[in-house]
Image 1 (cartoon, rainbow, N blue to C red):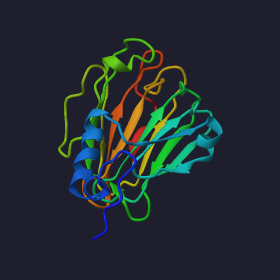
Image 2: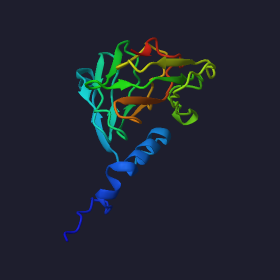
Image 3: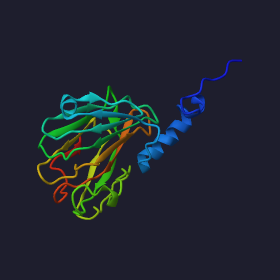
Length: 204
């Protein structure tokens, strides 16, 4: 009987790639920001302005300035899929990023907190990751807001609002597929200026 080929890290791919363990590992990444084992992709501002399709298991380091629309497409929403977008420049050029579901996929019905703390530019370590709920939240944290979406939505739009927003260096959007055909997104804010919530922020 042939031996199963090992991954470069020595682990058995039949156990660690796919299935229940992949789901649990990626759900943990979504909740905690533990990105060990993901593939890094760096996109300069021009590549961000041109847009790109994200892939399952990849971590996108986006040097987007917000000076041109960033159109992104998510991978197929297969249960356990996960991808992440990290902003690595201060984005305040006034244009929008759009993150569109592929094919017939949609965003899951959700509410998510976008807190505003005004602690100073780019202080990510003092922030908590915002995780969506599938019930309706009704009390906004700090000076932030609650953003809601329903299961018919296919596009997330966030504006790189000038001077004051949540997209300083280190802001992150995580995308996890809990149930096939539907995406949830998490957000780790990094404040620019007074950290006011971005002018446009919605799924539609």
